[in-house]
Amino acid sequence: MSAVLVLEDGRTFRGRAYGAQGRSLGELVFATGMTGYQETLTDPSYAGQIVVQTAPHIGNTGVNARDEESSRVWVAGYVVRDPSRVVSNFRAEKSLEEELINYGIVGISGIDTRALTRHLRDKGAMRAGIFSGTASEASPEMLLAIVRGGEEMTGLSLSDTVTTAEDYEEGPKVGEVGRVAILDLGIKRSTIEHMLSRGLRVRVFGAKTDANTLLAWNPDAVFYSNGPGDPQAAAGQVATLREILDARIPFFGICFGNQLLGRALGFDTYKLPFGHRGINQPVLDRKTGKVEVTAHNHGFAVKIAGRDDVESPNGYGRVRVSHVSLNDDCVEGLECVDIPAFSVQYHPEAAAGPHDSSYLFDRLVEMIQNSKVSN
Image (cartoon, rainbow, N blue to C red):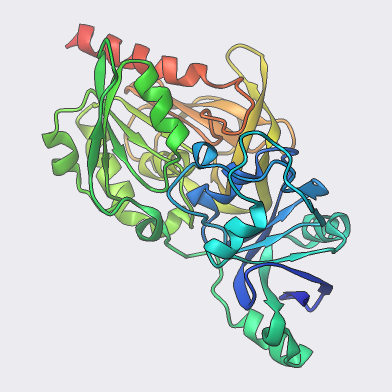
């Protein structure tokens, strides 16, 4: 079955249908990981996006329930060059294409993903559409008009789409050392598992939960998760975070949570040309001088001029850029000097791999313990 990928600038790629048939619209982005396609597909941060896998061979190991990072596949569409014809792994429970069909994910295969990735690196992420089956039979002009009529990621709020429907609580099996209130903006399962393994009890709250409700649970720290959308459209979560910071409750945020901390402190955010997505992004820890290979999935970043400590425009004291990208010098981490708060732009839970940054969960535990001593 034929399929066509149409970009909003008019460029098209023709290939074969992969997954469900029909049409899908979203922001077209590329992910550079050589492995971990299932973790990518089930990462809620990819909601609203058509993902291009730069690795040529996808689907070799099938899919299994253990590697899912959430309750479903979240990508809007999927683009690969060479999907595996067979599944060869003892952990596989079904094929990748079966999973895509099960969740109604429209995909395309058999196209030059290298040329497509180079195009996106040159022109930037943009709206696109995948059309297969009868949906691909419309005129090129009609397909392009449909794509250009789709939503843009700038200004888009998606937290309500991916957040938990009901609050829930989980505790460690042994040795509880603290309680963390999690604002679910699109959390991955591995993040929770990292916290539980370190003796932290967690309660996961919906994205619209206010500060009073979070603090009523008496947490030792508050955590903002990763998630999709434009941080500028998350005014409610930023206002809630400012109340947390005002109360001097320890705070840790990752990815979207890093951007929201930046905005709560009074800094601006901006859209990157094509973003950082994959599990092989080099980041410099400016304190230790070490380079970490990290997992990323973000299209927005915090804007801070220079790399010296700066004063928070909203009155929270000194703020330090703790980590920077070695690819484009983008801000990859924030550390508050005068209040107990820090964040990173990448994913320290790193499913699937690497594990260079898992120490950040230990830092969260240390911050909780220090806060208990000082109080």
